[in-house]
Length: 128
Image (tube, rainbow, N blue to C red; front, side, top):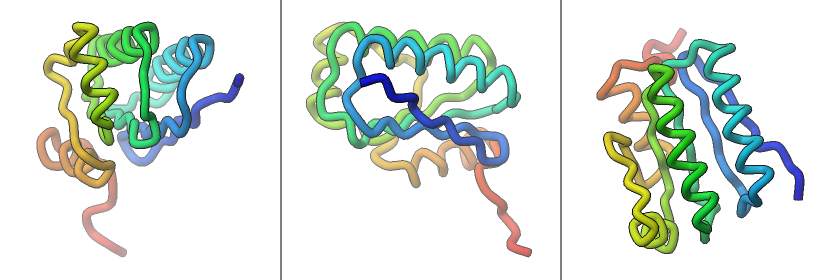
């Protein structure tokens, strides 16, 4: 499968929802695309939602860890949401430590972390 992962921008944030199991090529394209979008948009925060990902292999886990580290080097706060139990187990067993990365059970909590903890604008706070 060669499908691009959509990266959406809302205010100061980028949102990524991975909806299927990644193959190696798609994972590498995702890494490049996300870093390019960060550069183009000047985003302050990124939420990567893994709710639909049931399994992860060692290469994909490494790419995920790398893309988080690279985004942080670019000055972006990263929140990972929706980590399934099997994915959490695999990450720990492989020694992929997502240090200083906030995690949340769902997208709503992830957005609250960006907006509340770091003051990154993820939505309008005052309705028109």
